[in-house]
Image (cartoon, helix red, strand yellow):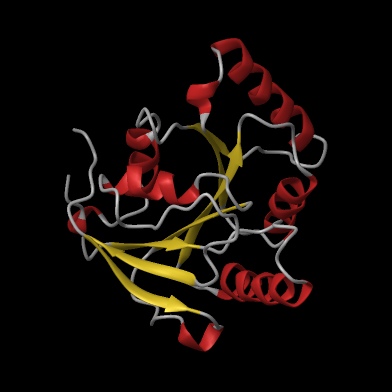
Length: 204
């Protein structure tokens, strides 16, 4: 049966760790460089256009936004990283805020690291992935905007990242290939999330 989201509501916009909501539901976080297409992907998963605000300006999200989904789990939108025009002080603040969340949050089940499939591997993405791995934070890699690529180009980027990660990883995280425009990868991502949810609380 197709997985779907019935209700989604913004709970908290947290600018610091003491504003995080109580740990009561499984949480799945979405992270990535600024302008990777995170807001569009979140809206695609939700089946709505107005959940996460999209913008052509990088660095739009400056808080950690917690969304309650079907009263079963939380979707967590992390601030983008790697935006050069953000001040050094803001980059340090975002970095600390993200670290406070991903390294200490007991209810965090997985961080989806979003990567723009159209560009070559970026040091900031690889550093973020390796840092999560070093701290044993569960993660999966989500390639965005794959509708812009041919099948051979997708296979090439898949092989490239596998080769890069296997230099330091014994077991690779799961890969997803998505397009918010074409709604590609929606079922796969939601099925992945549903596998973690208690069977008694699932709604298909």
